[in-house]
Length: 118
Image 1 (cartoon, rainbow, N blue to C red):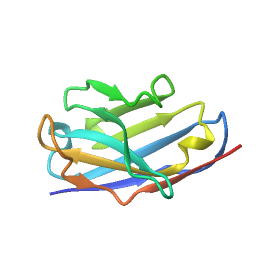
Image 2: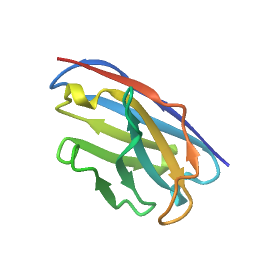
Image 3: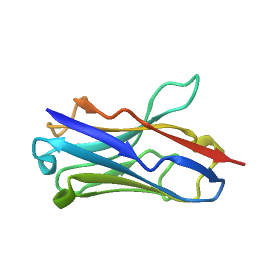
Image 4: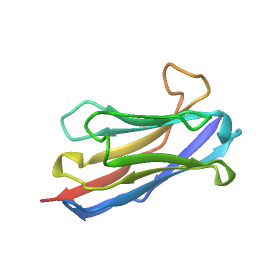
């Protein structure tokens, strides 16, 4: 089992930055792929970014060039650096982990709220 806890959400003005953290406990975090998702009110949850155990990254087109996903395996923590935030980035952000190269994410955090004022 892997337990995930997000932090770092908050209120920021449009154009500002936030860094989300995802602290993992349980099994070896370094062997897991990690992803970030978000869900805005009235909308479906959408994938934002992912990073493999080896450090390869992928991003949704909507955040490419503005968000950066990273991980520090020594700290069992993943990060999502969000720059140039837009009001449409406002959502609850979730981190997730999976033990496989591809497929569904097995473990989820409880989410952290990001609010962007215009």
